[in-house]
Length: 232
Image (cartoon, rainbow, N blue to C red):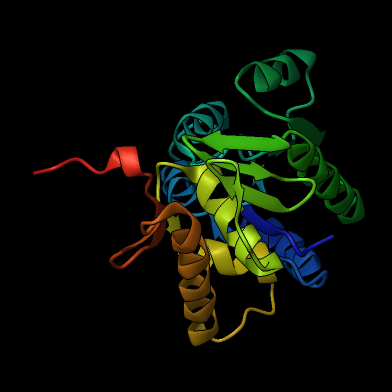
């Protein structure tokens, strides 16, 4: 399983550090937020495999943070609530506001890691096995694509990049998200990504007859279909 990218939302610096140190020791990438507003901003701007969310935050209640992340995040990121609130009513409210799992304090860090892995696997199972956008079709399980029923000669990395762009269509995908999702914690040099994007563009253009992958300045890349282009 690829290394996970996590967001820990916890205002207790001692708990955040201990949990972050343990999860980082698994070679997972960990970001932190000690306030709800900051957590929503991060989850809305970056891709995370799982959000670990405390409920008792200094500015916004964790239930509200959960709702806002689910509404604003670029993908349906799984949320694991980690909290001292162990009443049934709190658990019921947590799941009602969008939580995917709920674990009460004190907890074993090893169990947190196992639950994160389970949530990430579950999320992957929900990914569509076939994606169609106009004349473009991606067959996820077979890792192949065609345009107007004509096969596109893609490399394995090229297909993975195209899949990310298709899953986020019509939104752009940041360079950092592409690097993390495909290479985990061992990304290549930036020139290598540019080379893969260049090859992907040429492979798509050879079949479709136009450029489907556009560069978004200071962000990353975006899939643009022929019908998206409108004359000025």
